[in-house]
Image 1: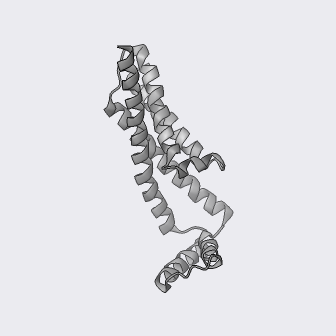
Image 2: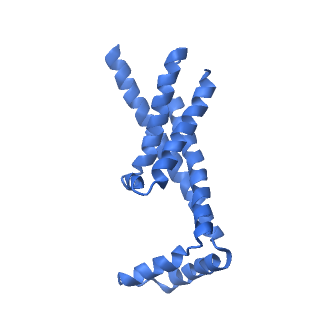
Image 3: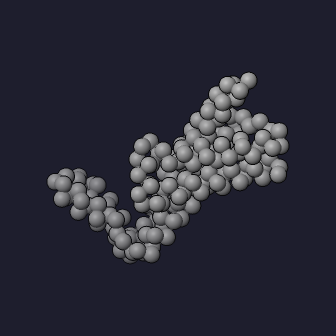
Length: 169
């Protein structure tokens, strides 16, 4: 197997782990702890790549690890945005109304400017079944958060791998 095939499979494996952890109801709680599920995805992809590259006498670097983590973060961020949008369209649930009600139940008073903006989002949901602006913000947020924490997971994995290599030598 060539290094490029190993890299690509590592990216897909890492993205799969990130997506799985993010969408599974109970397991997704892991992401409340500094996006640990995303970091774990980056770790797993790099550990897999390190394991597979030993058979072709290739030693991965921090650059390889960072690339695997960041690219898997980009891929999973895009896929999760699509999943979120599909669920929103299918369920036809308006999360804005639920959010406003929750704030009111806890006694929080939102400023009128915020309420007006939330109402425009709510009208978008009512009219189209989703909000294009919120879907876009979700995508942009995912494209920032997932690559950063995937990159950190990859770099962290490489640190563990280097410590292990130093003990062997």
